[in-house]
Image (cartoon, rainbow, N blue to C red; front, side):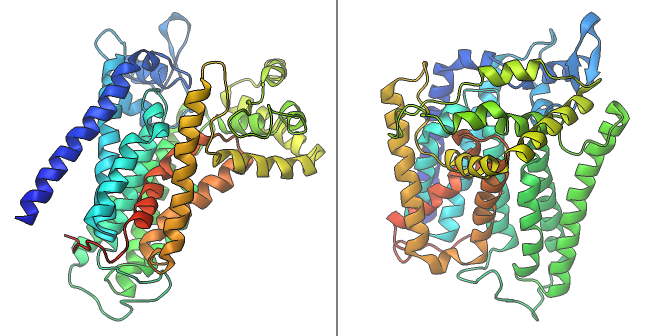
Length: 441
């Protein structure tokens, strides 16, 4: 009876998630026509020519590593015979990924906490304004959030299913081995594949992977030998994935690019004289809902006037050198800018722009403020539970995003992948651990 009730509620929950996500994306369907980060044009080029690149003069495709490969590759399957990526198909993809994220969040909270907590966490992810907004743009936030949540779900449900309140370094199961070595290996292979997909989606997640892989030795119901083997399997899969992408770039670009040829630009965008100078000026007042963003006009002018490289790899190197020169000349300001970028990553209020009304800024800001504060409260309220190994992917992702985007360019949308994790923490604050506790299945 309980199972039937849960199944019925889950069906209704999934239907509501589709309705909410679908309605928002449908209402903003025109915004999916834009291509701010060139993912659409790369996908269309890939579908038409078989080359991961940009279409040049005369219809000749030029190979590129300007963007990580996963998202454009996935979009290329939706390109029609005329070589056009219809926004309706992007909308379908984003809605499905969003609903998958909701479902995974629900199951993580159910397994770890309770049914009531699961519904609260799922509801928060369904209506989160940041995730809804990003689902209306041809950018990687939606797929990145789905993938990080899937990695966390596999960690909780498959790699460490018997953990209740075991600290990461407790050394449990040191002498007892189960007999399911093949199943343990299969779980490691899938986990390594999922972790590799996150890196192919965003190179930032390589730092996250480097923090998760060693921790695999300390979790799960297998013996030390099998846990060590699992670490090796996941590490080799990740190394092979990055290696294949690097070899492709050696073959196509003539350079061993392991990530993208866009890193120099994002580092320079975060570390240039125009931005540094703006940090000493007023940005619209101290009130968080009236702050205005940095005007990059001066930076863009200087960037366009730079000495260009002969190809995108050398051009990326030029941008890196310009950024490193700025950092070396103004080290104190670099330190302060790292603090500013870290703060902006977690700032709950979006900056006030010409296309955002004060009402929108206030609604999003109040919601995000509540989410962040309640998430911190949920972790602190039951710190004993959050010390267990299933929480490590959460803290590792928070550390990764903060560290990387304190140096490279940052804004609040870049914290999207951690929002489902914060939603679970909020649910833990709302629902006591002992309330409505269900046995994971």
